[in-house]
Image 1: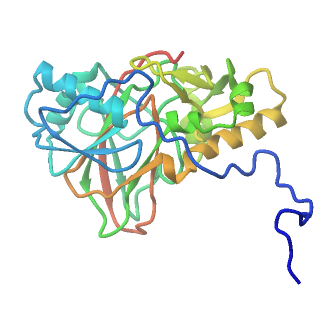
Image 2 (image 1 turned 180 degrees about the horizontal axis):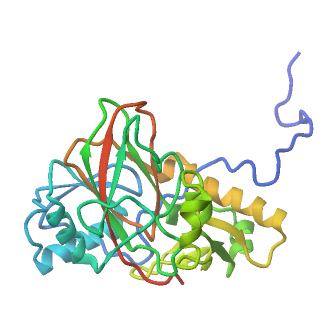
Length: 310
């Protein structure tokens, strides 16, 4: 017996609200009005559709000319995270490169490297905490979160230990229209306690509560250089959306947090010792993959002070 595909009834089936957004993704690498221009000082090798590019032909230990700095900044705005292989920068050179984008930030909650501006992540069997395996944007618990960060791997495990980044402009672009309406003009609270209490006890965190009170940022921020809308909430530090009942705030935040998990919005970088990643902290989230067991992984990060999100 033949069955008409056009007339056969379907049984009723639903999924939980906010639980299924399949279909074609909108993958815009650049904002409206972006002018494509060739890069003249280096080679750009895209690593994913909208985010991540390897930059070849540069020695970052050398001072940047104004023209080179401008072109690198354009690449950063276009690709959100830039990768530089085999740089092996000294700590001084790493800080000097980062200063091309502004004053450097210090973070007393993290382990210090050879200066106050250098954070050192040394992960081995005996070293805790790891600050891994969670999608987040750095220091959104500050009134002025970091503009960007320059990370160098000093020592890599035999396998694993990659880092992933997610494009939060693409994350916003692909929200359903009803969700976009619900977050238009919304403001969220950010607090350092949830992210750091995974690793530190109250005795270590309590002294910093006065220095780092909860702060409020827009759920959707504008990029200060491109004007593009970007989703600006993250699992580590965003605690609630103001003006909403807790259950509704939690439901909406869960949905928004999941946008960072969409593979089409991501890039994944496999490190070698001496590699550098420079990312736009305003436009991305990142995730250090903790899949290398008891092997050692040593990274040093320099963060660049940012502005107040709007």
